[in-house]
Length: 262
Length: 245
Image (cartoon, one colour):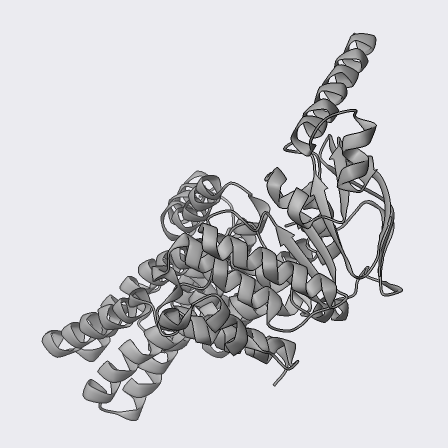
């Protein structure tokens, strides 16, 4: 086993054993079981679940990520004094935390899925939902880690990470809407697509809704996306953009940390 | 053993290290003294590769440590503050470091030496500050490294453990290890240090034995000699400030 996998193993183990990880998984289990059991209509339940995931997964990942990054600073110093490559330490911590959050989420949704999913079609939908949750986890933990290395002061870092979440989850949609209303007279399709790529939460919403083919729920951005790319390539584009949202912050984080003084 | 050549480091406008040149031999205990902010910790962290100097080079056993991480397997480090992953227990922490370093370790010897038997299965977050510090000490000693670095090791230790730690440090010195130590406790310096390195504003202000230091300052004991050094340095900076004004 190389040193990267060792770091992943131990930071995964460390977070996985905390009460928070358990609580997080349990929360999604209860929510999804309740929704699937009581709503009767699978697709409706799925859309409700989607909305909860789109809001909460980024928030929890951000909070966990920032707390972990700041709280493990002294231990990171101890690790840095060991014969380890810097990148392996930080990438390992990131992957360890992300994987344990993904596992909590996956278990929560997965158990509900085993209990309630009927048709193959439904399983694919739930799988998509879990995938989106996983991608959002990776994105927002990465952003949180990046914030933690950019701001030495943890209160400031925490505030900025929460602001990023608030912006992506709430403010962005409002701004987009305002933009659309103001520039009503111009052809806005391409601009809208471009702008959507800058919000990972919007992207995951589109990814799921394209899959569900509930066109009525796509909203303006989703409808434009659907029209412009069609379902298949629309999904490919949004998936690709989401992957970039993981990779780019992570690369910047690793480069910053390479030259950081502890 | 350790060659430090013209190291300089600034954090923003603050010049923390300003051209440090020393070579540290094996079989000696070096005590780094100096007022707060004189660059002791930064110097130690540069040797450990935690801080990257702006200028200068550090060689450990003739190996340049820049962009190098393998040399750290020859160093044991006991930091000032002990913070560990919250949900691991002590033995898991030791196993993890052994897993990382892949060198034979003698953790059992030091666990019993520091009376840590009861802490084996306790989660690290539930240990007291002093106990964590002892865990830190075990981590530094257990791999039998050639170089041992202690950043204010006495903080939080009870008198018995402190005594035990000092005995152990002396024992390791006699085995031919290079030992670096920062501290504010002068009795510790008097008891342990073969050489005193007094840092001031990022420069070496004095280097020599304790006796040497006391003699050159014309004082009765180390405490007074250090006080004398500090007074001199204050005057110097005041003069400089006046000149600048």
